[in-house]
Amino acid sequence: MIENEDRVFTALADGNRRRLLTTLARSSPKTATQLAREFPISRQGIMKHLDLLVQAGLAQVQTSGREKQYVFNPTSLQSASVWIEAINQQWNERLLRLKDLIENDEL
Image (cartoon, one colour):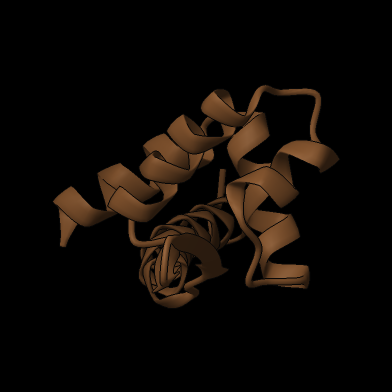
């Protein structure tokens, strides 16, 4: 599970990939050529970013003849979100313990 989360966070670390993912989430499927028209990046650059998104499980490729279309896949994003929520919950619990300690401290 951690290895998959590492791939997700690595893919999301780049702003261009986040924007590509947002575009795919809003309106997919799209080809690399269609996406290249929407971004100030070459088609080859788009392909490299899409490959990383696919490797992370954030996008999937649908092939129809010679055409490859990319679609958003929320599954990997959801597993990363679960991890983020678990960390958030741990932090909130620590803050509550600190608050209780401060409020109950009788100096």
